[in-house]
Structures are given as structure tokens and as C-alpha cells.
Length: 143
Image (cartoon, rainbow, N blue to C red; front, side, top):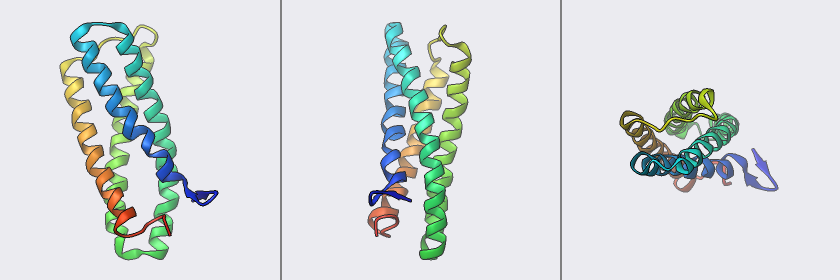
């Protein structure tokens, strides 16, 4: 799906790809300094990344339907990409919901949550790499 010739999914996915690592960086800084401003910045980055991530996922589903019709040979890679990043969005949705219930009395992330966020972001990078290969190698959504 495109707006003025530009693929919407590809435009949107950059936001969670940037905001989730920003969330982790702010969470780590807050964990070690105790400065509440970083905790709030972390919350807003997580919240924004999750909301836009859901939008990107919805538009990605439309792209997936087009892949199924036009390039069935790359469907396996598209499903792996979509499944990987959908898992990331679901994990971040849960993390966001937990913090949202506490808002405005946010609590700093524990070391365990920092590890979960780090692993989730690593998983996202793998999914994004597969998505990048769909665009660059297989020309999905850019023709």
C-alpha cells in the first residue's frame, strides 16, 4: 500500500526501529542515574514506538497479501520477517501496558526488564534485516 508512490509500511517501520532502542538507552541511563526525566522519556519512546509499530504491522499485512499474489517465492521470508517483528510489537505492547497502568507514577526498569528489552531489540534487528533483504534483494514493495 502506498501514498503518493511511497510504501507506507516502509515509512512507518523506522519509528519503532528508532524509538525502541531509545527506550532502552533511556531506561539504562535511568537505572544507573535515577534521574526521572529519563524514565519519562523511556515511557514516551516505548509508547510511541508501540503505537506506530501497530500501524506498521497493519500496513505490513497489506504488503504481505501483495507478496502472496505477486512473489510467492519470497513468501517464506516475508512470513519470518512479519512473525519476528509482530513478536517484538507484542512484547513491547505488554511492556507498554504495564507502564501505562502505573502512569504517572512510573517505576524504573529492573535489570531483568533491561535484559528483556535488549533481547527484544536484538530480535527486532534480525527481523529488520530480513525486511531489508525483502526490499533490496527481492524488490518487495518498491516496484
